[in-house]
Structures are given as structure tokens and as C-alpha cells.
Length: 226
Image (cartoon, rainbow, N blue to C red; front, side, top):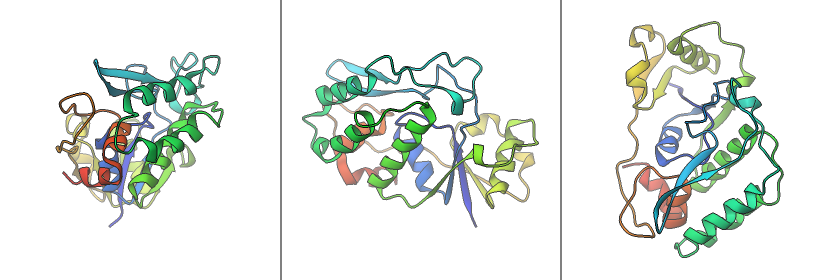
């Protein structure tokens, strides 16, 4: 059975994103989806001495655009600012030095034009750091979906890559039409429930994966099993 998961290309997403990636054979990056400024497509949260704070990639006018066409606003020195922010808040973390250079190569040594290209490169970086053996495919490389409803599109994309089971996060419970799943099985996966030691006080869940990497290193993969 080939298990397929589908998710929009978020910016350095939380551990639940990578638990879904770990649990499937093929991970489809839904880059044809509509960009939403209130989602996590170009931002995420880290932990600071003052609580949670956003890290954001500045973008040019994204209104009514699919994610794959959203451009980064390189008029701002956002890459250097990102590294300065994570250094200020994670330099004392046990595994900061183990991963900081990899992120520097992405944010300081490359000039990204499209948000989706940056996000997928970061997904690849984290995938390698966690040792996940999963194939990542952009949905824009697949034939256009003929279905008009959300469930039908997901099933169609799953079939397009030879999938026999669709793996959904818990959010799918609210909108997926289970009656449409026949030759494609449906399974739900819950985000990790475990905690770990963080800088700056008690545990705060659902932060960007960088928080876990800097604090837990290779043990981050074990957190996905909780």
C-alpha cells in the first residue's frame, strides 16, 4: 500500500507537519493552493525570553495568487535578519551549532525569488536532518485536477502518484467527505503530543521545527513518534 500525504508548502512548519511526512511514502507539496496571509506559508513562530514571536519572509503582493507564484520581497535583508533572530534566541541551545551553518547556507548564501522554492529547500533540509525517507513531489508537476471539490482534488492527486491511501491531519475531519473514499483509503494522523526541554522557561508546543532541532538535535525524530 502506497501512503500519500498532501500539504501546502509552509515555512519551517511545526512537528505535526513532519510527523505526517514521516508516516507516508509520498509527500505532495500542494503548491497550486491559494496563498493565505493568515496561514503559515511565509511565517512561523519561535520561542524568545518574552514568549512566542513570529519569524517572517517578506513577500510581494500575494493577493489571489497560488503559492507557487508568490515572490519574495528581496528589497529587505530578511535572510540576515532571520539568522540574527535565531542566533539571539537559540545560541545557547544544545544543538544550535549543529544546524546553524545549514540554515546560513539557505538564508545568507542563496538569493531566493519564489517563496515556494525557499520553503521546499527548507523542507528538504529538515527531512535530511531527521533522516526521513519519503519522496517529495510538487503538485504543479501533476496533471490539473478535474474535480471541483476539496475532497475530490485530494483523491485525484493521490491517485496520480499511485497512492492507495490518503493520510490526513486532524483538520481534515472537519471538511473531508468520507463518502468519496472508495478505492483510496483514508487515515488520520494526530500531531505529536510529547514535550522536550526548551530555552526560556516551560514548554511551549507547536513552534517551528527549528525550536526542536536546536534543542533536541537528532532526537527530534523520536518526538514524531509521540
